[in-house]
Image 1 (tube, helix red, strand yellow):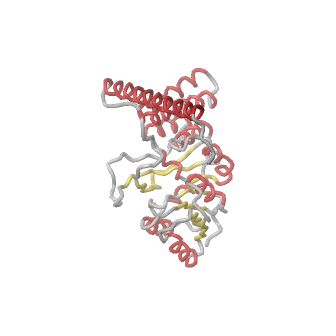
Image 2: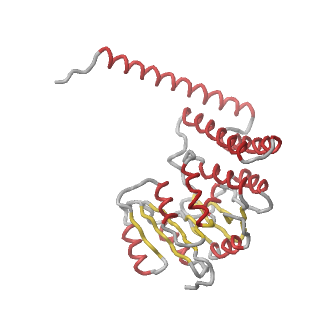
Image 3: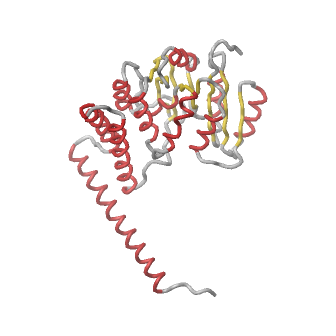
Length: 312
């Protein structure tokens, strides 16, 4: 293993990752970068993942395997993958993605060539469950031209997968707490937007990740959750716009960009009337369901006071 280039740590958090995990690992082991380690953090899988990873670590010196005694949740497992990294550079890897052979080497070169940058971003192509390309538009890498240009591209492409680029380990380890303080659904883009306004971010089109699209269990599932999501996103992008800018003109511009992104992402429909109808319907359903829950809560409270339970 060459020590002439910085060590890159690839943190791979996984829970019940078979069979996609085999493809992901093969893709990471095929990287042409000469000095890397793969840190697998198993969140107490029970599908054979632990047996596969244990055998893999015994066979490959570049693979380090850790198994949690119990499932700690995805966020904590992501943090552990970062905490256990030894490299100067770090990247998270999902257990069901795959990468081009020069992914790490290209991004390491981009990051080492930009002294102030904290992140080097890839191009992202979306794949379906069977591994074929989806119709979802690709995410382009950050241009690095300016903080504003990177933010606009992040919003335009909804490039949440930039978070799976290559980071400076010390920086991301110090600042990962910022991610944990954000609402889990939407935290990736919110954190990346905040980073784009604070630090240089670079990228390279030659580094490509094939990211498998899957439905998140954290997505809003009812009208009240959807309204809360909209409110949370507007609040956080507004707070970011005010905190990370120096003049009212710049604040207004960044806030306009950010609000427009949230509107396009979660609210807008093909026609204005459909958009208005969706908002009214969501607000009405959320209000009615909240009222019903409030009435039920009051009824239960009164029942407990009027008819207290007696010990037998």
